[in-house]
Image (cartoon, rainbow, N blue to C red; front, side, top):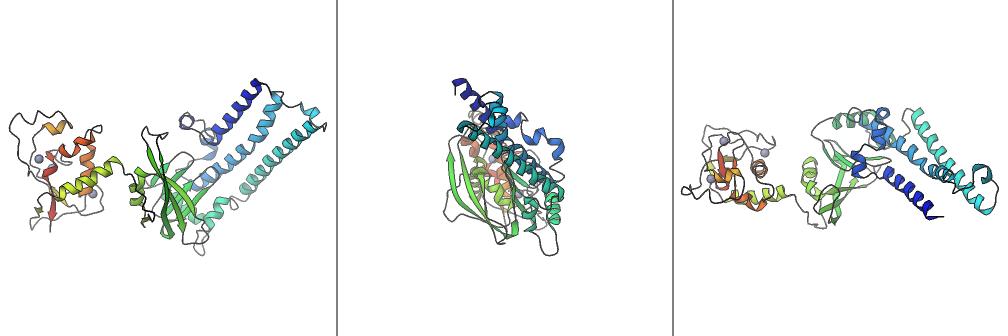
Length: 380
Ligand SMILES: [Zn+2]
Ligand SMILES: [Zn+2]
Ligand SMILES: [Zn+2]
C-alpha cells in the first residue's frame, strides 16, 4: 500500500468511528443516525419504546453495511482487483473473495433479522422480549411499554448521560439506552451498588476534572440481567432523590459532590448554630414551596448587628447584596433549610465560592436582604 492509500483507509475508519461513536461536535452538527432519519424514527417523547425499537434496528442495519462499504471503497480506490478478476482464485483473490462473501452475508442476515422483527409487529424484537420479562401475570409486553411511554413524558424524570448512553429514571422504571438495545428494570425490584469510580482530569463536556461512578443495577427478578450504569459524581444526589431505595456504597468510595451540594452542607452546619425561632401558637406552617417534600422549617429574622456606616462598603468581595444592610423579613416560614441553602448559593458570585458564607442574599419571597446570621430554624 502506498502512503496515499493508507491515508484513505484511515479516513474510512475515521468515518466509521464517527458513525459508531459520534463526538459531541458531530452530535451538535446533527450528523447522527437519529437526526438524519428523524422522520422515520418518529417521536421519542410520544412513543419512547417504539422509537428505540426503530432506532436500534436502523442502527444495526446501517452498521452492518460498514464492512461491505469498506470493500466497495477499496474497489473504488483500486486497492482490490476489479470485480471481474476477483474470482480468479489466486491467494490474493481468495482472501478478498472470502471477505466480500462474509460482508454480504453479514449485512444480509442483519436485514433479515430487521424484517423478521418488523413483520412480527415488533413482538420478536429483543427490546420487547426484555419488556416481556418485566410483565406481571396476564399482561403483555405492550402494557409495560405503555407504562414506560407515559412516565417518559413526565417532566420530573431524571435523565443524564451522553447521546447514545443515556440513563433515565422515572417513578417506576430505570432505563439505560445503548447503541443496539436498551436495559430496563423496575425500580421497586432493583438494588443499586457503587462498584467503582474513575477520576478523569478532563471531561468532554466540562473543562474541569470529573469523578465517574460505576453503579451496578441488580434486580430481585432473576429474568432481568444485571447491568452497569456510569454517572458523573456531581449528579449522584439528583439520582438518589429520584430512587425509592438507597444506593449501597459498600466500598466506602468518597463521592465528590457538586459545589452547590458542598455549600448546602456547610450552610446547614452554620444555620444550626444560630438562635431558634419560636413559632407563634396561631401560625401553621405548610410544606416548603421549593421542594413540596418537607414541612417548612426556616424563618428569616434579622439577628445580626448593623456595622457602622461606611464599613460595609469597604468589602468589595461577594455579590451586590453583600454591600447592603440586612432588613427584617415579614414572610411566614415557607422554605426548608435545604431549599434555602440552594437559593442562597444560586444568588452568589459563582466564581468566588470562598465568599458565599460571608455574603448576603435577598429573601426568595419579599426580596429583603439577609445574611447567614439571620436564618433561624423553627423550634417546636
Ligand atoms: Zn424545600
Ligand atoms: Zn421575606
Ligand atoms: Zn444579617
